[in-house]
Image (cartoon, rainbow, N blue to C red; front, side, top):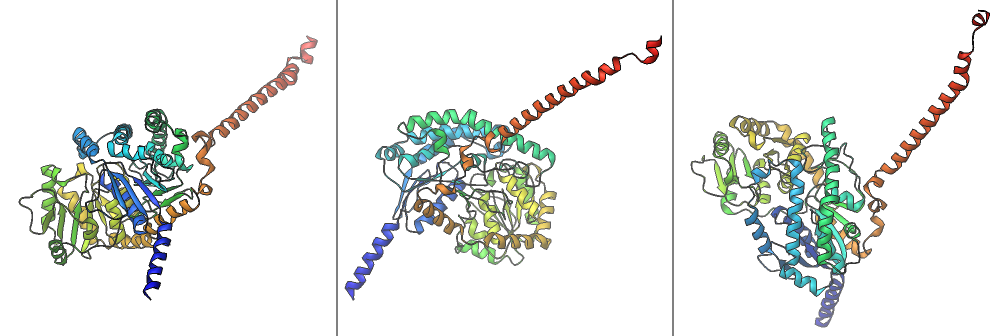
Length: 519
């Protein structure tokens, strides 16, 4: 019997081992919210039995088996000190400056990361992997790691489709109803909004080809001198794109078959809360409000007048308020509890939470959508305004812009969200749509990653559109030729008509009449 058990164990070991993939995750941005999506993707793959190596500035605190970190925290810390960005000032930056700024910054960081000692050690080792998963966010050169390590490439984005995804996949984003993420539009745009959305979309494409490509090409050739693919071939080589979006949180739009939506990938089963938070929320018999501005934006940096406006409103509520506030808050009302850190996913899941006040980041809004909790948004920058405008358009959220925070506006918005049942009912309805899927986001990630590997890059999923230039993809060349044909034909018709007029009508009109002949 023991021999049979040992044999069964050995058999299972080899079966699992033979199906295990070596996966390299490349998550270079210094944003915890971006990293959270990449980490959730590789966690799902790790849970499925695959071996994980992760390049990021956020190494694990507790080592795991089959999970290795290639850490470059030093680079992140260096740039955070040099940049010293105030997120509230960042939100006031004109939209046409934001993209080139982020692009230039990203490419500078990319060169430093690829030169960093631990990354160079990996590059020089030429260790073989089966799959490389790379975040796509103004730093496409990291995709070259897939060819360098002899593996299939998979990309992911932390929000809805950006212009770069269209470049990679041949996807089409009609500017008439697909807003760019950094614009605060929904899919139902006015003429002026459609005009600006079109202009901004083309502006991003021009920036990529004129500003980014020359710089990234030099970085690409410097760090990957033996690469056989051209820069454009490398950029268009992902087998699959995982995208942090879903129709319930954004809007319906076309995608190519290799673009897989995995919104909610970071949302796991709610865990028990720390005793103090559990007791506070359990005792909220009239309901509770959770207030968090995420990891990058800190509530302690709110101007005093806006902070006091919020506290005055909270003090008049019968609901309890749990606020992520990073320092001591004197004179706070009795119904307000502050904490420098919150297990956000877990507190939003508490049955007594009636409203979530948020900056509108996609992680927090997704967690609220998962639980069916209405939103009050205070968006600052990036895709936050678009996320919150979607919540308003769908009927489960309201917005108070940061510059407009007053007691009257905050109190009016909270009164509506707490007392009008339509917001809660809509949030619950959309939550059912969000969770009603054939596979969970985690299952989708595992299935499609293994699918791409099984089918050696899944070339059959790739559209021929990805091989076309943009003007070919939208048939500008065809329309131009048709326009020329129309112009030439119109000119020919004009000259023919003029000739016939001169040949027959003008000559006959020039002949003298009988009266003229008599005279």
